[in-house]
Image 1 (spheres, rainbow, N blue to C red):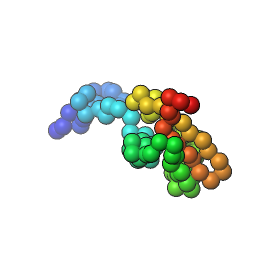
Image 2 (image 1 turned 180 degrees about the vertical axis):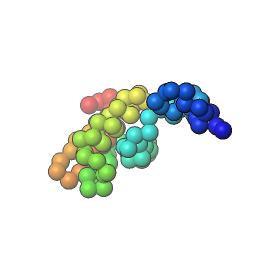
Image 3 (image 1 turned 45 degrees about the horizontal axis):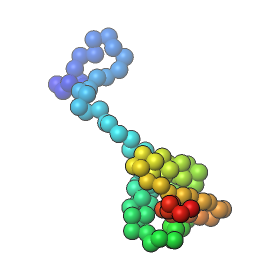
Length: 96
């Protein structure tokens, strides 16, 4: 019998070892945010990524927010803009 399947002893919820608890966020935007940040690493100066909103699994606003949170957490400075069809993302330069 595994630790999580041990006797419930009157508790409502199952238990598991702390080592088995997921640490870190693996939200639904992680794949697209990771891909965009990776592409920003090799993006030429004075260029922007043009991401079709139709290709996103969620609204452009939600992906944009997730992207800005991830960039801030990693200490990057990025800028974003959006129109009805695309999300634009670029590395923010010190000149701006």
